[in-house]
Image: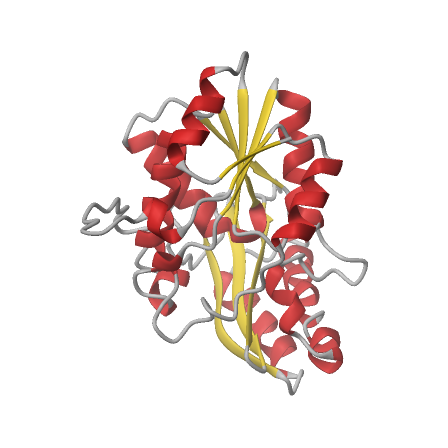
Length: 281
């Protein structure tokens, strides 16, 4: 496993690579969800590259950039175990040198849901991912479904800008209690961790209601909200039933849809989602 901390080092390592490149961009503090992506990249490509970069431009002024969990030694040991070929670990100064002034933005789809609650977040995400794609030049890039809106935004950017790669979105990896794996789960205390299992229960309820023929999105949202509200530690930011592609809220589920939510437990903000496939009656 080789390490690159500068763009020129990364480029020189790439010059020697043969065959298809699978790329997993991460912010580190790796968990089972990340490793599943690395394994899929390993199975489908000759070369696997993982980036570890806590991207400052996707955090708002009151968000957890400084507190975001970091443990590079642990991350590298985990990646070594997965036979990763190259790990790219740039500094903020390397990615955003002095007088940096260029941004990549995807409109509309970034204004809603996460974009509404985290203004500027997606501008940071699309810019850093576009930069990483230009540096690594992967054939395939791997993202988790847990960050559904992020993956959808990146797919849109790749399509609109004719980027020459395939975006692969892998299913959310969950703990035994259904909680989606997330680096931010480390912030939860025991009671909050227990309380957070209500998220998957609410999403499962949405799937059950829809599977039983309920196509009224408002009704499903209401049932989900009611279930989460019974958990005293949960503070809901949004519960959404939206078009799976545009992420615009639906009144009736008459096409592929996604049920998604953002809920706070103490200081920790968690997001999760499930796909609602059209029912054929």
